[in-house]
Image 1 (tube, rainbow, N blue to C red):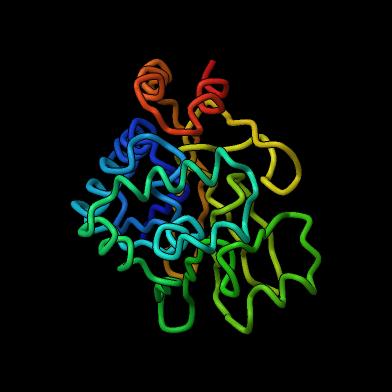
Image 2 (image 1 turned 90 degrees about the vertical axis):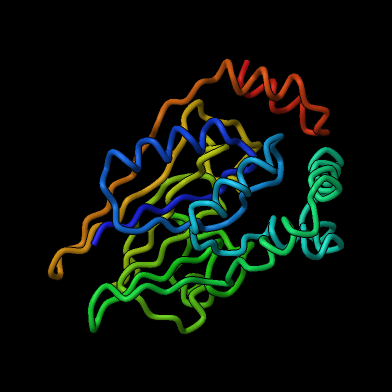
Length: 242
């Protein structure tokens, strides 16, 4: 079984298409998205339509929650550009697109065999805002996992790829398709890396394989799309791709 895991697309359709093209070359059996797909980038319609057409199961991230419950964004950020960009996206989504976002699941569990499983979350099983990092103390991880057991727990949210072990479980962060960062978001100001990120999990008769992939995409096209947009986060996005 080979499962491709994508996360944190954030309205970057150019990066998503580059990742999907690479996934097609890797011959995977399943594709699962770990959330945060539409906001903070200019191509929300295109990303949502592509995921829906693929029939890709999606975990609900904190940014999907902000679209469905807009008041919740104010407990997350006081940055006007971020708040305004989320509302900018929400104002442009149709009822059908919001219905699709509403179909995203709190978590997705996949049986690898009779005794082993993959648990897909956005932040953690406890909260879509939890940051599972290489340095998170074991006791904090216990609270974040909230009693859930799995051979492998896969998440996104921090925009930084990571693999670690915790009490026999493997914890995986597949990074970000649309806005990977030099360091996990809570550790400093976000600075985007100029590639797309995702992961592939392989399960073969008890053998677990993890591949973290970094894929180039057309930066000039992204810059042109951002420049043509009036998204409130436009200045920050242009600076990242300069």
